[in-house]
Image 1: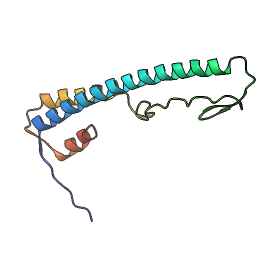
Image 2: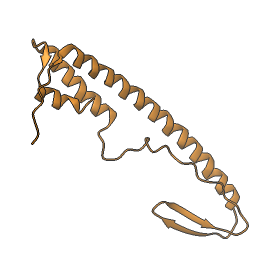
Image 3: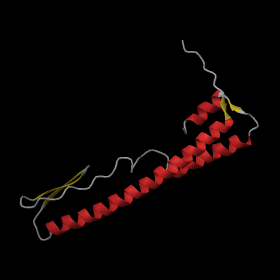
Image 4: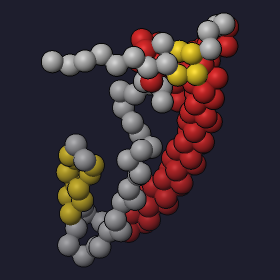
Length: 129
């Protein structure tokens, strides 16, 4: 049998934690953007290098879900650059959407006269932390 837990957290502490989370999301989003630009540059350079190596050659190419496989006995192709797994996260809200939701929550919390956040409100807000 599970017991209920009653938690009362200071509204000010909750607002502070949410504001900190917004800053973290912004930093992560910026880093993700930078990582994506680095990957795109490396991939462009790799594509040009492969094109140079294969120019005028008879190549057997196969397309698979994970990319293109090229077979040519005399050419050693450079490895394709890998992207950091955190750069593309599918089925997740965008950082802008997360920030918007958290900032809306902060605005609502700032309007309250209550000094503490009750358990149900804490549970709803904790998804952002």
